[in-house]
Length: 391
Picture 1 (tube, rainbow, N blue to C red):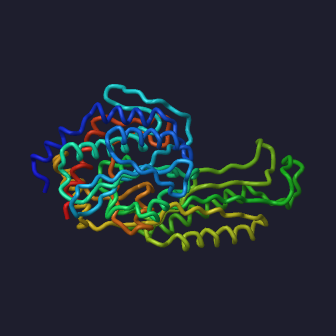
Picture 2 (cartoon, helix red, strand yellow; picture 1 turned 60 degrees about the horizontal axis):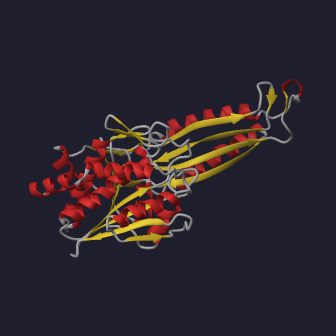
Picture 3 (tube, one colour; picture 1 turned 60 degrees about the vertical axis):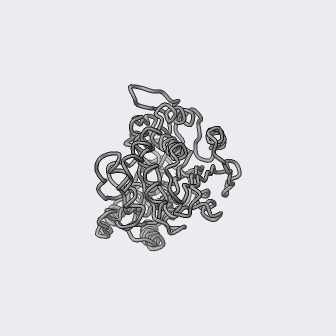
């Protein structure tokens, strides 16, 4: 347990105005995925001005090298990593503004506010000299948001040795501590027929119907979803198939030559991605044969499933820190979305936890986060490092 004195010292050291200034600085710079060079440079300047030694690690993306800081205690202990992505989804840019204690702007929730909280946690640790052992490794990078990014910088950082004994991710999940997360893939199915698009009244009687085949395919995916929902995990939920987009044709009375379907496949069993893909391949092959069409499947595995033990040292340290700040531990639960924790768990085999501010509007043009939540996260992260690194 962290002493009351250290809790008070860390709480005082987290500077609300300084944290807000950092968050505004980051939100003020547009950074859609694959274009995080300017914000990476600005974050480096902020950290250097604070007196931290900053490394710029190419990590498979020379356009915007990752930002890395090591804050060392000088004593042997564990390394806790704070990791965050600097890129945002490709939506119209919304500049930062403050509204009654609420910070708004593109990236406020996902996840520039969280990164600012991590930076403030580092400052609080340095100013209080409260880190008893080990070190905190801070990493920030591009290439997170899909489908524009492929998470290459995560792999590059791990391959170069920039990975902690455990990793915290300040994504917008605050009401439970996720001890497991599902794997996820994005799929696109394109249904073709020979020939060009044609007016409905001129189409031959035997012309394959790509849109009707698309409707059948969606129905079959729905049936598959019901079947695989039996694959369940107490913290993850269950396997699923989701279709979010279907497009075909140019006008209402045209028989189109193509139909596009896009969605996600999620699973609870680590390593199940190849089998999940094979299920879809079998489904589309059979439908293509009976519909006299060609169906192409494009599959992108975004992350694998993972789990963390309730008794892992990072879980215990986090819960102690959260209890010290909020007065209670968090209930255990699932992580409904995929974040970079899935990738670290799969590639680096380290325990990963996602916890961030109670923010809203991720992947929309109305992102917002209460400033009080950023202060809370900075305090929890600093105290988690104190408890975890002192092995």
